[in-house]
Amino acid sequence: MLVAKLNDQFINAFDACQGKNYCCPACGEHLVLKQGQSKIAHFAHQVNSGCVLREGESYEHLLGKQQIFEWARKKGWQAELEVYIPQLEQRADVLLRIGGQRIVIEFQCSPLSLTALQKRTFGYQSIGIKCYWFLGSPYKRKLNQRQTQKFVQIVNRQYTIIFWDIKAKIFRLVKLAIKEKPLSLKGVTRDYRILHRLSLLQEINPCVKKFTGGLPVICHQKIWGIQVTNHPEIYWRCLVVKRLNEIPLFTSFSLNSWLYLLKEVGLTEWVKFPCLPSSRIINDYLKVFTKQLLKSGIIMMDGQTIILIRHPSYHRSLMNQYQEIQRLIQ
Ligand SMILES: [Zn+2]
Figure 1 (cartoon, rainbow, N blue to C red):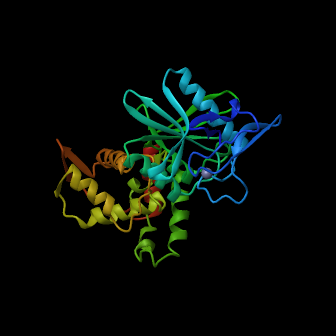
Figure 2: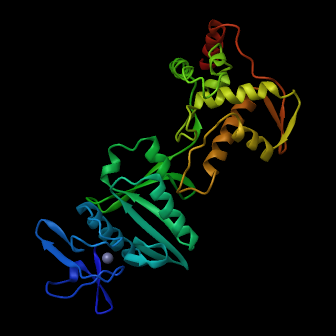
Figure 3: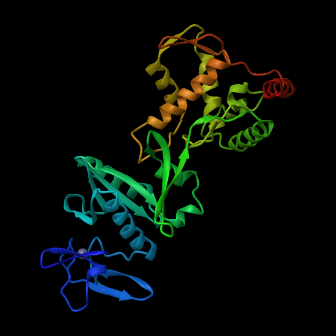
C-alpha cells in the first residue's frame, strides 16, 4: 500500500522515511516501510497480519495507482489516494470528487472474479459512488469475451474498456459497439458446426436437433462487438425463430412486451455486466436484432407497436438456403 497513518495524518510512502511508527488506516497495525532502488516505496503489513488490506501488490499496481492519482490532480480534480471506506471494508485506489459527485478509480492488474468485481462495484453504488475500472498490462495481452463482459463500462455514452499505461502515464480507451455483422458463408458454416456440437446436449433442449436444417437466414445475421448470451448466439436465434413460428400472424406487441418476449425465450441465459446499468446492453442488442427482423420483413413497426407479419421460414434444403445467402451477400 502507498498510504499509511502517522500521528493521525495520512502520509504517502514517497514522502516517508524509516524509523517512524506508520500504521494501517484500516486495522491500525504497525506497517513496515519498504524502499529500495529496484522497487517503488510502499508500506507492508507484518507477515502474520490478518488485515483485509494485507495482500501484496505488484509493482505495476503500486506505480499505476500513484500515477492515476497524480494525473487526476493535474486535471485539477480533488483526488485522494487509497481511501479506506469502513462501511464497505474496501479501499478505493483513487477517490475523486468532481462537482459533488464521488468517483472511484480502481486500477486492476491481477485476475478478479466476477463475484468480487460485482461486490466492489455494487458496494460503491450502494453509497452513491461511481466506479471506473482501469486495467493494467496483464489484461492487454488477453482480453477475451469474459473479461470484456466484466470490464465494459460507459464512457461518453459508448461501451468502453479503459486501460492505464504505466509507461506513457496515460489512459487508453478501447471502444466497443453493438452492430450488425455482415453475412458470410464462413459464418454460416461455423453456425452449423456449433449446432452440431450442441445437438449432443439434448438435455438442454430436445429441439436443438430439429434446428439443423436450412435455417431462416435471420439465424445467421449476427452481431459484432460484445457477446450478450451465455449460449452461442446462433442457438438463441434458433429459439427465437421457433417461438415466432408459434405466434399467430398479426399479433401485435408494445416495445416492452416485445423485448420481454425476446429476453425470456427458451432457456436464454444473459451475460451479467457488473459495470453497466442493468440490462442496458441486452436491450441494445435486442434492438439491433429487431431492426434485422424489420429489414427481413418478418415484423413491421407502427409507432411503438411491433406486428408479426410473416413467420421466419425454413428452407426446403441447404442448397436452397445457400442460394438465398449468396443472393443477400452480393
Ligand atoms: Zn491493516
